[in-house]
Figure 1 (cartoon, rainbow, N blue to C red):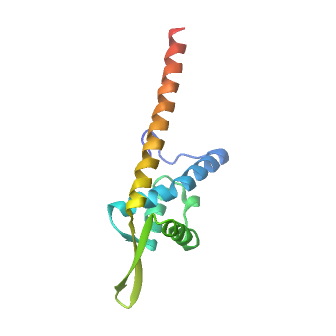
Figure 2 (figure 1 turned 30 degrees about the vertical axis):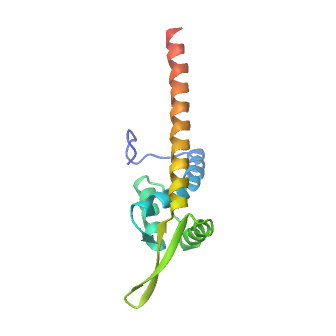
Figure 3 (figure 1 turned 180 degrees about the horizontal axis):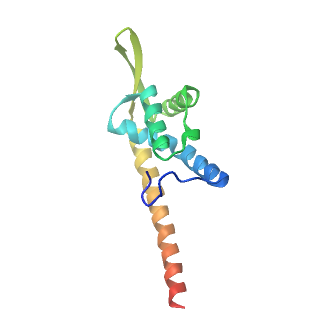
Length: 134
């Protein structure tokens, strides 16, 4: 549950669209963050992302194989992640780990987002404080 969010919140259609676009843009950063912690296979990454959506009652944002694997392929083509095949029982499973370039991209992107949001919130707080003084 999101902090300060009432349980079973009902989102408007605009909320859902806004949230969907936000989460879609954050998926690749989420993938890089997840595999920085530990290598994971595509199915595990997909399930982790979907659990995040479930916790927030955003089931309609869940993704499937047709979404996650092209994303992983794109990140791999950009050399941000690298996949290696491992034998698990009778199956070959591809585990992804972050590359040094992926780590650099993640740090730069996270810092940009964090700094921009902090600046936005600071600006908003400044405006609100000025209004309170009036």
